[in-house]
Image (cartoon, rainbow, N blue to C red; front, side, top):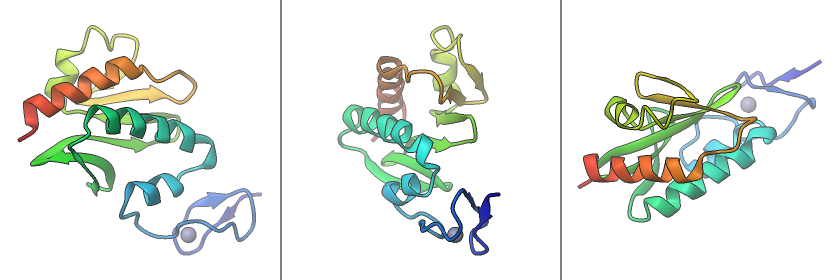
Length: 135
Ligand SMILES: [Zn+2]
């Protein structure tokens, strides 16, 4: 039976599991607050974005990990079965053909945890966002 933290409502296997309990303020806190099983995937995505957008600021915006340069360029978030990448509706349209194998809607690209991250494509999408929205 899972243990539910009474303070933040998250479920854990172990009773009294120590965890970051509250609203994450940094990417590290955000990633640490996710299930252990999905953290490597989140770190992988973060590394791709970090490398592609070296001059962007990492922050939490709209409760999501965000890369910012003058304005928000791209967000990502951990969902139950997928990693959501939020480059905006225009980017999703520009890359629609290459994203044909993924569940995409309204600027959300759903990257299932059980598939390898399309690192090269994610890099190009992030670069597109940097050029389209960055200052
Ligand atoms: Zn908690």
